Length: 203
Image (cartoon, rainbow, N blue to C red; front, side, top):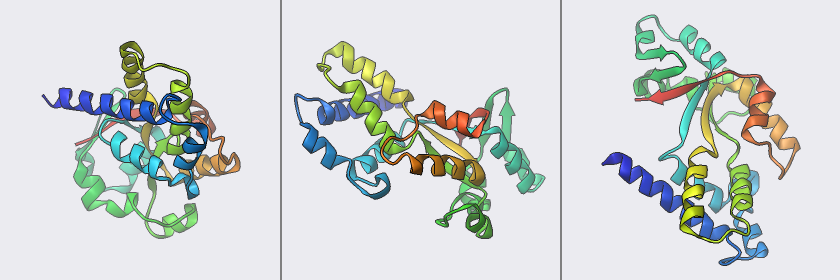
């Protein structure tokens, strides 16, 4: 039952963004206003974040995985299980016992580490880039059942949430900031930090 609910959620998300970006509903001037916001923090970016958080896949970089094992106690390592390319981490590790390793509003590697933060959850690619990709995918398409099904599958894979080191995040962030509105896609950002990733499950 839960899987069906998730599928309906994804379909509704795909339909929402089709309606926003389809030329049959809106125009370029309207679209530009929708994505306006400092640092990509527009209402539309926030909408995507809230919706996609229900279904996006998580990954953890190889560097982040090994660093985490080094920073936690021997006893707590049992809460992290790696089987082949899948890593499972207990929520208690991230949100309770080692919360400060993952969450702090400080900017830059030095300040983050000074405040105890060594890891970052990064939306890959950025939310603003996702909106660009969705707009490009939808442009000129009619809302047929076939296309909406295709868009639903695309929405599932257009972005991942990556648990990476603060050093890896800074490299990505600095490169993206230099490109202004033309942000990098996921593959370009992966190549930039030369990272290997495992699929991540937080339970």
